[in-house]
Length: 321
Image (cartoon, rainbow, N blue to C red; front, side, top):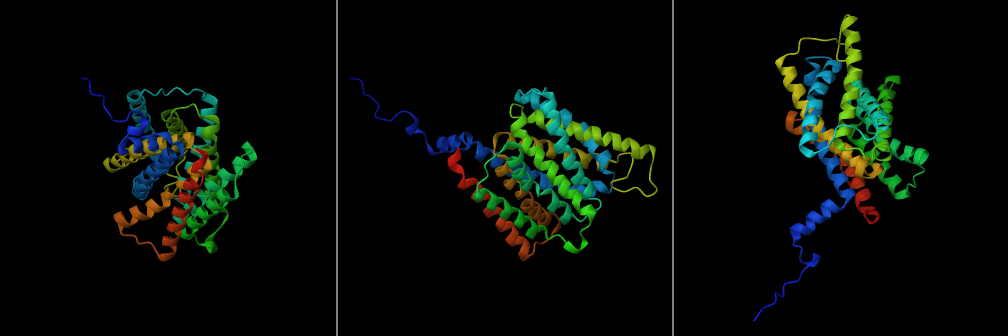
């Protein structure tokens, strides 16, 4: 006599682990949020060592060396994962890479002439620009809920960074320009480069940053200034410490930039932009753990507001996917 199994079949039999895996893999918004969080944690960690890099060389030499390390790493990643480094649409990818690179280079440059608070507050205005560009360029419908969530997140950023309003000047507009470029570049990612692989998007940014940095580095090397600094220094013989710091930065940046590119490619730009506010939360945590820098009450409230706004925006719109 044959005994039939009474165990149920099909999707209903999926265990908790399998159902959890299906949830994570089946939600583009969730994947995008996790990738953005992961990238923010890595970037905020490696950026804690930019000051150490500045002690060794100018930003342009650092960016050139980092590109020379990052591109081969991306080639290896592409080979292992089966992703080609040849873009589907070269011109669109180049445009996106140029805009994002401009934002990141301006941000790094302002770190040498402005307090970190002012530079950071400007760069993290990007979600506001994502919102505005979505409406103006792509006729996106932004709900009042989304607007309030993004505004709350930016308010939390200001509470965390606490920029000195009395010291604001025309130079203080440069970080805002960085925020505009970065926000526009992230918005262009799904609209122009939705078919591109994360490796292609990351390689494009590193390549453009590297080429711009080469040109500026050559200029300051041929026409050195009297007292060079992080922004105006030419080529110097790289020390072992600089090579190690650059390699460390390159590996972290390759992982983070690839993850954030994929997050914007598969996610909703305005949602991912709010999740990126977590960079400042992680930065505060790393600063405390690495250097013992404490966060005051206002900054803690800002962190809480950032968490609430990002979580509310992601969960509140979950019915869209």
